Amino acid sequence: MHDYLGRFAAQFGVTGMTFRDVMPSTRRALAVAEYARDQGKLHPFRAAAMEAAWRHGQDLEDPEVLALCARSAGLDPVAAVEAFDEPKYLARVMTMGAEARRNGVTGIPTVLIGGRRVVGCQPYHALAAAAEAEGARRRAG
Image (cartoon, rainbow, N blue to C red; front, side, top):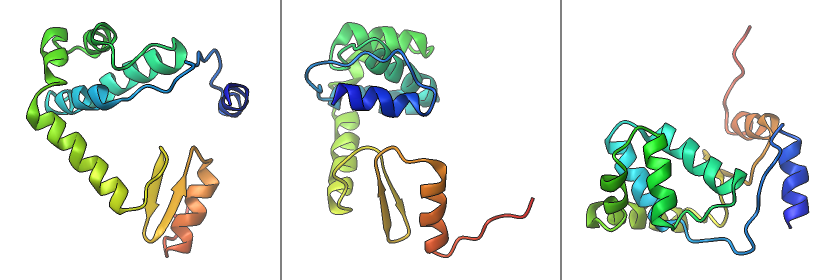
């Protein structure tokens, strides 16, 4: 699987990835992402977490890793780590998971376009085709 992922990512210019032997849970990272969202720092936190997980093979359930990602995103690392046990953030994560299951999501990423489900990392043309099949029109120019 690691070889396949490496080759697939390389098609998009992503190289130098490090893979863990076991896919970790990301519940804590998702709770911290919700905290980051509230602080207006979701995108920087997400970028730092992706870098930690995919480039460096770090465990996103490790509080030290999450603190480093938070600091990199301009967040208070202590508050961010505390957020992964806060009921309001955990509730958001559980709600997102329940919604995903209701929508038949079995893999990440999954993009829902109208009644169509596009699963996995797909090139732009696959997403555009799904959108056009649901009635979207290309812009001129």
